[in-house]
Amino acid sequence: MKKNYTRLPLDQPHPAFKKETAAWMPMLQVRVGHNHRQTPRIAAVVDSGSPYCFFQSNVGEYLGIDVEHGIEHFVGGITKGAPEPVYFHKVQIYVEADWIVNVMAGFCKKLSVAAILGRNGFFDNFCVRFDHSSNPPVLEINRIDNIQ
Image 1 (cartoon, rainbow, N blue to C red):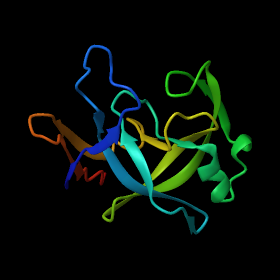
Image 2: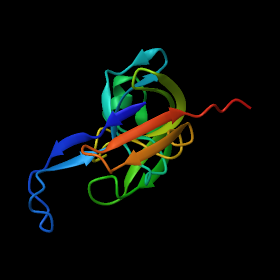
Image 3: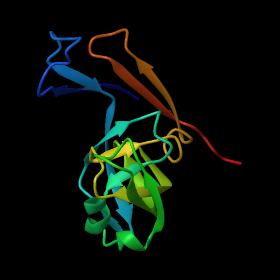
């Protein structure tokens, strides 16, 4: 599957790139499932720098998950400010209209975006190619057959 990056308007241009009024982000539409419930579609950033898949805590709460009773860990960089607690739970991620993957995802109150698709859970299930040679840039993903 190929998908164009999403154009996100910038509040203020970067001082070094004053002509850029928007940022292009590799994003996919996902739904999150748990115990026979699913969220509406959520825009998720495809982030090869993130070790895990993350969602804002309100996504877990929507699914009826007692978020703070998950496996606790602390993360920084993807949150606003100091490292924040993240609580991991088993969920299903419905990627676009084609695929379902079972993952251990982290839920965090101060996540800087709605959702992040990271290496553990997403990149180990998909072959991902980022192509910045076109305008807009293109994200290509293909499911890996993990049958063993």
